[in-house]
Amino acid sequence: MAIDQTRDKIVDAAERLFSKFGFHKTSMDEIAKVSRKAKGSLYYHFASKEDLFRQVVSNELVNFKNQMSLIIDDNNLKASEKIKLILITRMRVVNEAANYHDTLKADFFEHYDFIDDLRIEHDKWEKSILKDLIIQGVESGEFTTNLDVDELLEMYLMLVKGLEIPFFLQNKYKKYYSSFEKLIDIFIKGLKP
Amino acid sequence: MAIDQTRDKIVDAAERLFSKFGFHKTSMDEIAKVSRKAKGSLYYHFASKEDLFRQVVSNELVNFKNQMSLIIDDNNLKASEKIKLILITRMRVVNEAANYHDTLKADFFEHYDFIDDLRIEHDKWEKSILKDLIIQGVESGEFTTNLDVDELLEMYLMLVKGLEIPFFLQNKYKKYYSSFEKLIDIFIKGLKP
DNA sequence: TTTCGACTAAAATCGTTTTTGAGTACAAAT
DNA sequence: ATTTGTACTCAAAAACGATTTTAGTCGAAA
Image (cartoon, rainbow over all chains, first blue to last red):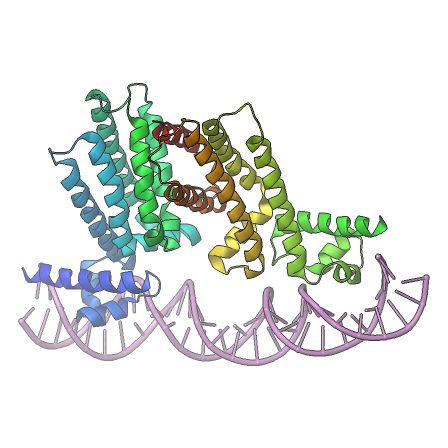
């Protein structure tokens, strides 16, 4: 019990500080101070600063999955509605995930390889749920049958991954999201028979 | 005659050097040396280094317009075919415009404000020709009539401008262009009645 | 119109010193 | 088994200052 409380306090403080100042500009001493824990305790729970950061990003990814799952598991929605919602929600959730942004920025300038496996696993998950949705849509007759599912997936990734930098690093989310929604509408329409 | 030859030689050398090393890492002394002209001559023809760079970028934009005009003026193509070709050709041409890339990079890190007016004017031109094409498509019955043309334009800009950084700064043009083409196909289909 | 060399003021580069910060060690307390 | 506090190491980064590079100018000559 007590052990988890300490861990949580550390992760809490880390999450706030990392999201405000980024990985490099947050020091372990600062995290210790804000969480009111001794530096030794941080290293008792986490092997390194990188390990702590991984935990923080991992939490954001879990949140991402949860939000997506709400949509995927909603039986009132058709496949096409789900895809639309997923795309729009995805951008909103990522926009709120400040620490994931930091890894995006890092990708651009330096690259945090200690986060790679998290990301790769997450990308796989995202790809597989989208693939399922497309297949679902084709089988239910919502989409045309002459779609190359894997090609479509590549396109999806180009779009959402490609726009991440302009959306989040250049802070154009607010400027772009209504256009993005419009694009999805036309896109979904283009998938129909 | 002679005067234009000198100017051309300077612009030629500048174009090559700027595209290879970028604006900052190319010196006026180097341009003078490569063009075999005296430094004084550069300043006789161009007010400043920035002015010379403007000229080089301006040339690339003229080339851009020319290539687009080939498509726009082709009477054998329908509006939808033109839009598809424009989008695809646009990305290819920008991919080849090394000095425009440099301004993209600068936009990201610092911002070359001495190029702003060129870009604003060019954006206006691109917007207006695309607007014409959409209207053409609606009038000829290729596209649905319930399209908000200006909203559609915003979307177009989000897409092509937004993807510029991933495409050209992150060098993903090769990786992405077939997916981009696929996206255009679905998109065009989504515009149809 | 073009060249050349010499000049200035500002910016970029470079090597050195100083400071910061990740990570450790350990004794003492829960 | 957890947590704290202090004190430490050592590598990397910031700060600093001296040095060099470079945009831009000037003027005389071709």
